[in-house]
Image 1 (cartoon, helix red, strand yellow):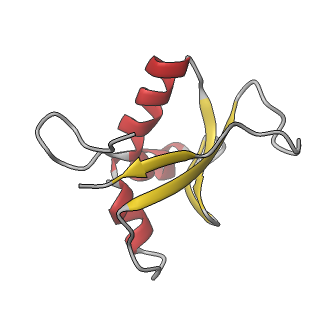
Image 2 (image 1 turned 90 degrees about the vertical axis):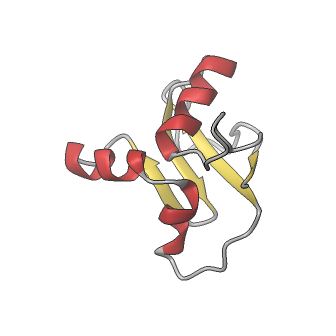
Amino acid sequence: MQAVRADGQEMTVQEVLDWLQRTYGWTVSVLLCGYTMLYNSEDDEETQAQLLSQKLSETLGHTGEPLRQALELSYVCEEEDAEAEETGPPLICYLP
């Protein structure tokens, strides 16, 4: 997916979650990029609000990892078992 809004700006974590909901009907409870947690529905409301409002690169910029143009995101949906081996296919996001 192109992680770019109509105005050309990079998507926020919330916008990626909304896209997954609209496109596939998935309610994501955990969103990861490698070992970096981008979103966890079990976080407190303040932490969730902070993470959801950040652009993908802002969230990853805090990890010290070099930012890439293509990100491979992993996710767990509410309907899935977080411990199960089977997860959805990775989501490749292309940043502007």
